[in-house]
Image 1 (cartoon, each protein chain N blue to C red):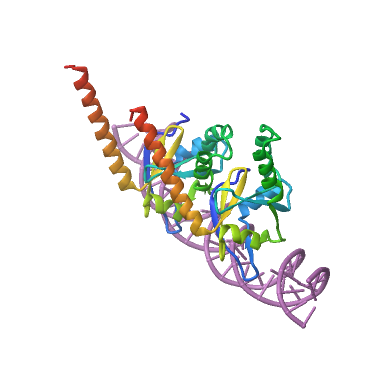
Image 2: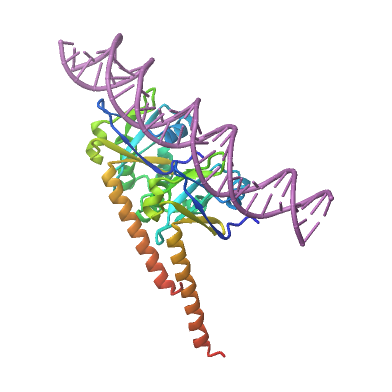
Length: 152
Length: 152
DNA sequence: TTGACGCCCATAGTGCCCCATGATATCGAT
DNA sequence: ATCGATATCATGGGGCACTATGGGCGTCAA
């Protein structure tokens, strides 16, 4: 299985390091990478991380935009300039930088959450809050659809 | 027969493991899988479990969505981050994690219920309650239809 | 010198593999 | 039809391997 799925919470040690879940690591290694690329999510207090191919999904989307439009420039800047690298040590750990803490509020623990082609890093509490909100939104949407369909 | 049908209740042992019913297992193995993927149902205190292809039909739908839209993010989050893996051991058992217990209330026994393309896992009592409620709803609906049809 | 970082090894917990046992079902022979 | 042999399955438990985590030590740069 070559997909990032599920979620795990790991602790940051006294030296500011945290283990990337073994399952995620094996996917990264299978792709032949020794470092990760991370973006600060636009809408969420989380980091999107993965191999360099993390960008291709967004690049494809960019290609379909007008290259002279301002939003395309902004997006390109966001993708290529605002990210950062995460170096994996010999034991599959990364050091948590201020770059990460500022945006996510991460302090002592990190929740790693799969996102199919890449994964996310969260403060555990914020992850839980977001999870609850997403479930609630989806349940609500489903209820609306049932109403308009009139069926059961 | 390559469909998940019927229901069986098995006990969780002292190490927190439970046997997946042999009939379900044979379907999974025929599909060539050694691990399952499980989602917490949005509207029921149950888990939807099956092979990873449980996701593919959603993934295809997601690929055609705008990667910056919120609904697509919600859907992706639910499918990829909110789920969890269930690893089958050599004897066809899975370990029951807190992830499962919280959502389902499962404690000492698990009811496996077929759902055609996948299957569900329930607390036996809740399964029975749900079963009774479904039967009652269906009977009620049938009665309504008989009335409006003006039959008998 | 001091602190950040990379590389190394130690350890505890737990997840996974393997084998044993008893219950139940299937089938064959008498 | 009865009884016994065999296969299949749920359940139990021992023990190893791997992972997360902690910490030592050398290197390099400020």
